[in-house]
Length: 427
Image (cartoon, rainbow, N blue to C red; front, side, top):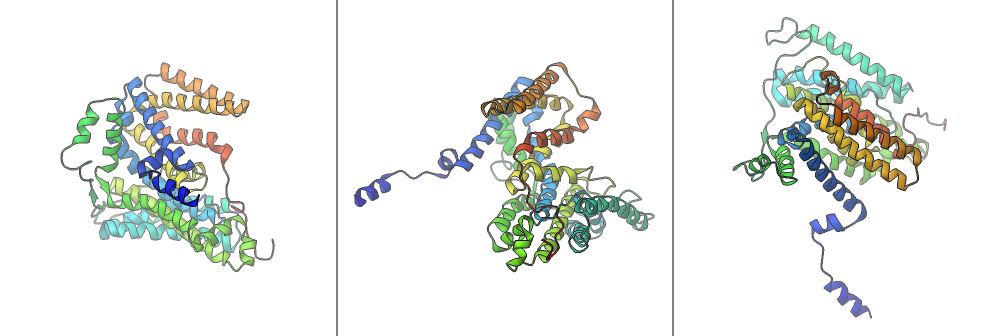
């Protein structure tokens, strides 16, 4: 009998990686089919609305560029909150990162900008750790204070160092960076003969949209962008596949139990919050690279959107990456096409209709009715609005943030001790 079983197992055909994605394990299969469904849906909306910007390579390229700062800020929030420290001050640390990048970048080039932004953001994280971990200040109060202080500090430093500076600059901006980070295009896909560009210009259903996606994500990609994207799997491996990550996450779930087992809770919280500030500062560096200069107000609230991406992703690296991509795409589309934003209403209507059906099958009548009502409102807006006012268009990423968080709030689970002040011996 064992021989027969062995023979049967040996004769069974092995699945290749592509087959495994579509027919394999539960989570990978669901994610793969979800991505395929989204691409088909985007393609259908593009054809119906006639808005080529919805799936153009330029939109996807801009989306990647704008998603990276949000991704880094969200990763920073992940480290802090997995250690049990709520970091509302991410936007302030990002502001410090933009100033540090501008100050070091015009003197020592793009490498100096990276180092300056990371160090400035880490200093903000250190201040937050001192306030919350050592002195037990309420995490939200400390974060809000850092956001307020950061704006005042960078203004003071700009007045001190940039006024009458021979290199240029002024009260609200630094001199231009002396160099930019290198970029590259992938062979076959985006360098050499422009095969994807030709296919994209055909405006064929699905094929042209996939070509636009591939071309946008592989053409003129910065080396640091690749590094930032690779930080997502690196963060997962560090936090979920190492002893250090297990200890750090235990500080955010049950610090008293972790302390009783010899885990250095205070030290790990400090490390996590400083790393959080450094990653937020690196997100600010990318904003400086986009403009090639530091400007006051450059973050434009992106630190809060990065925090929203973290919450949308349920405090997981893959989920927050999806959230950053979504908000980056909304930001890129409103910059590329005002009429393209109207097409998003049709996309939202279809997605909300799907949510309504899903909630109805689970017999959650209230959620189904709310989703159906918003779907109807979105469809009505698409059918009746030609061009959105400029003010609403520029607010698209924030509206998307609020909408997505309201829909995702039902399934969120934050670390149990997140935001709680820990004192040894008091729990």
